[in-house]
Length: 156
Image (cartoon, rainbow, N blue to C red; front, side):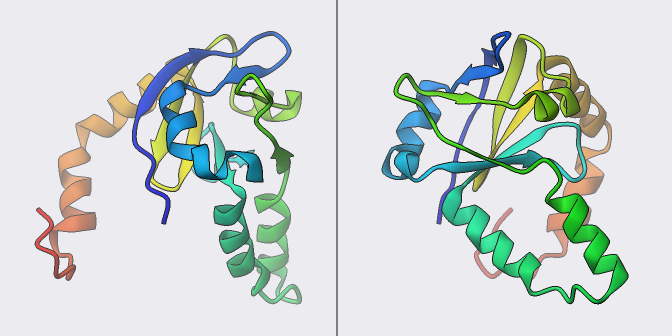
């Protein structure tokens, strides 16, 4: 199971190329050549970069939905909107398409943030705003999500 760690500020050029931070290249080294999928996030104005194996696992779950259910069909369409396969080039860059870059308002200063098995790609200002807003009620959120957990590993 992939468990990425880190948050890094970097740049995206006018052509939409971003250099993956060295720390992520090291963490992804065993799977770098397999490729990735880049998509819009569901809840935030950022992008999600999935290693292909992680994408295949998620796709298998989504593919189990009944397409003859209207809500499922609409979800599948929206979930896959703008999805692009991407590769890391020989210099360690990925190309963000114009439509995905526009969705996430990517312009020069960006943040690449690990979210366990995927990477999030944010406009720097939007990332800082999201973190600042989350700080206000993070303690309540942490208690609600993890406080009454039945996880037997003693997580605290």
